[in-house]
Length: 154
Image 1 (spheres, helix red, strand yellow):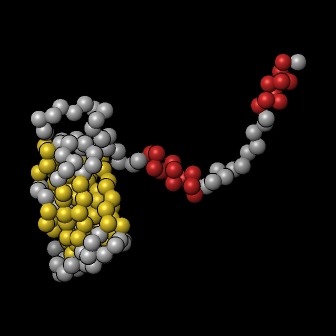
Image 2 (cartoon, helix red, strand yellow):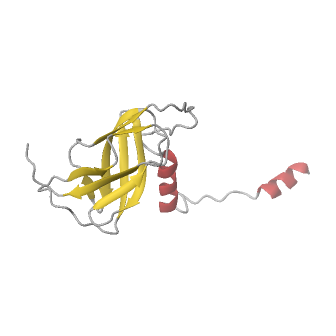
Image 3 (cartoon, one colour):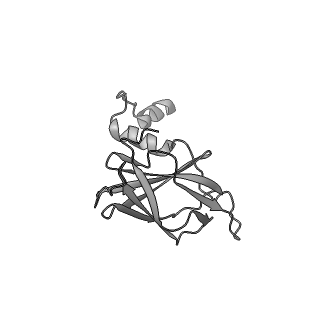
């Protein structure tokens, strides 16, 4: 396997297995280049993605030096998740080697409590589109409905 232009991610805090609903455990990952040299991205915003066959969840954190730490604030479905960190144009790791497994806890979570994972966050996509197109794709004048209502009464 050609390892050039590869990024690497190594877990230094937390475990590979976490109970469903555990929002207190801290997870930490170190960001490395292809030669396992730390990449200093201090102060950069990072997005951590947990991806499974059923969908994706994301969390935000700030990089400290070449490390990112975070907690899982949402109840995730029981599943094995691929972990990726997206920061400053890098995606760590380049391969699919880092995983975290969410296992059933003693607590029974209802479907409303469990985060619905989706391949695309529709609300987020709509919000992006609306902010990029504040006047919509076309500006159509709507008639004054009060005038139409008053005319209909005559």
